[in-house]
Amino acid sequence: MLGVNRQVYYRSKKTKLHKQSIAQKVIVMVREIRMIMPRLGGKKLYFLLKDQLSPLKVGRDKLFRILSANHMLITPKRQYHITTNSHHRFRKHKNLVSTLDIERPDSVWVSDITYVGTRANPSYLALITDAYSKKIVGYNVSTSLSVDGSVKALEMALNNRKQREYPLIHHSDRGLQYCSNDYQKLLDDNGITPSMTEKYDPYENAIAERINGILKQEFDIAKNVKDFSLKQQLIAGAIKTYNNVRPHFSNHMLTPIQMHGQNKLKRKQYKSKKLNNDVIVQL
Image (cartoon, rainbow, N blue to C red):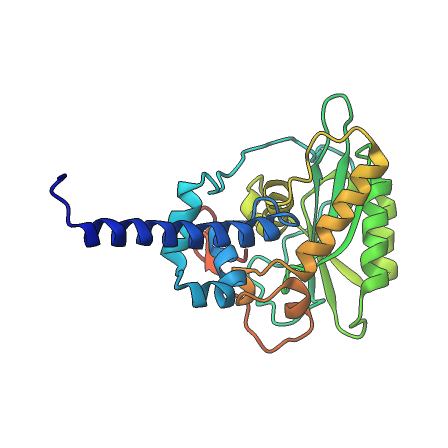
């Protein structure tokens, strides 16, 4: 009566129900992962779910179509808060890592401070990350930009340091915290060589900036949590998940913990057009 063959109609209806069933299964898988990594992107979702998606005949493109149809694609957030005060009387050091080839863990640590609070409840996260593996080796959450938070993050990193017999470079911006006498003494006491950015270009400390972005955009650690103790617990949980679960493109899709446990893989890197042609940046 409608000019459509009965078989074609029911086959089309059955196919539609089958596709909806597959999409629903995929959504459940994605939500399970995003329970612990709320804003994980599609490419990493596909890597983590590849074995489960294969029997359903869902490839990367189909996964993206399902995410798009269900409004589950991630739009990056843009947030910017100044946490660096480089106008101070303390000594500043040269950049020693801009052209350095980093071939093993615990050879270069990068440090930064990022804002994780609100106007009513300001708080700051000091991070120390291994440049080779992207593992967060030390961190501290505090309510001020005092030197104490950065020192505590460094002390945690030193306690976690395994390969003490090899030389280590500590790279940071020229912030007051990293140039202070207390911080520099702790580096010197442990035989660590200081290195600092020489320009106001975030690409000079790209790894630290990238890790800040991952924690704030994918793990949403900068959410409005008034209870400071709860915020500390949430950030500790996010860092644990980041180190142990989240794969990195620059780590050949290994997690930071997996990458940190070996030294055979060569880290992925690229040349930055924003700096001079010889500078290599690693994300």
